[in-house]
Image (cartoon, rainbow, N blue to C red):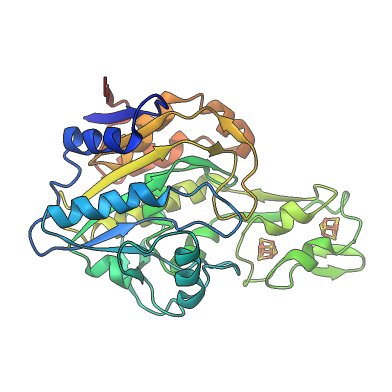
Amino acid sequence: MTVYLAPWNLERNLMVEANRLYDEAGTFSCIERGDLVAVKLHVGELGNPNYVQPFFVHDIIRRVKEAGGKPFLTDSNTYYQAMRNNAYDHMTTALINGFNMAPFIVADGLKSENYRTLPTRGILGEIEVSGAIAEADAMIVITHDKGHELSGFGGAIKNLGMGCCPKAGKFRQHRTVGIEVDTSKCVGCGKCKEACPMNLPDLIEGKARNTSTLCMRCPICKSACPMEAISFTHQEDLCRALSSAAYGVLSTFKPNKVSYVSFARNITAFCDCLPMPGENVINDVGIFASNSPVSVDAAFLQSIDYKKLNNLSHVDCMLQLTEAKKIGIEGDLKPQIHKLS
Ligand code: SF4
Ligand code: SF4
């Protein structure tokens, strides 16, 4: 299976290059006249500029319309408390960050109440899929490739698995991870509790203890702890959960109705959900296009030294891909990469 790559060549007009890429890859061939087309993206958290630039998205919207589709921008609310946690804040963030080129429909509704619970393959068994994604006729998945603290990296599979699910589905996936406090390091300062949106963990006899079923397994407390006393376990299960959720999301589309465009630039160690982006850890690569999430993610990993991301996150980036293949998501773990000349 071939993945197409427009290198991030600053000597060229990158919008022209992107359009050449879409033509070569057949990005919009998944669209039939009258289709309601979900253009899935991450509109960015306020303060972190590493989302895909609006002019690329503007052009994708134009091309969807040319292909006869009715495009709408979409994403699902976050399960953590920030500026994409409900539809009002999410839409406000989208507008501030420049995403006004098409209707922005928050896929899971005002307070994340619009979803379908569907059977899926793999570790989860079932998964909640956001309503507007489940109802769309076709989808263009726009991804910013970067590292991820818990899952190695965030690419197209993660954009499907986590990004197309409501809070309930995100919570289900994140709860596959365990959390531990090393009491020999904990000094009971309470900084973790101050930072935590759920007012966790409990402080008992001067030590943090986290046994709450409400804990979302977000990395906020870990980052806040000055003693590095908090760690996560079973991260491999989160990687498997992403693929399992992605399978459930894709099951709502007919075959060949989803296309992928991934922007591999501003590649940071951790994800775009943090308000502070952090340093780029890998050089810019370019824009990938494919009709498979496995292939497009594999092409990205093949093009970088992804062991660096493995070392930063302590989990193997390839696990999401091998699991996706294992449960039946089509794609190639070692795709041919056709680089535009
Ligand atoms: S992972 Fe940490 S910050 Fe997140 S909800 Fe649990 S205790 Fe709070
Ligand atoms: S921030 Fe770290 S050291 Fe302080 S109470 Fe929490 S776990 Fe213990």
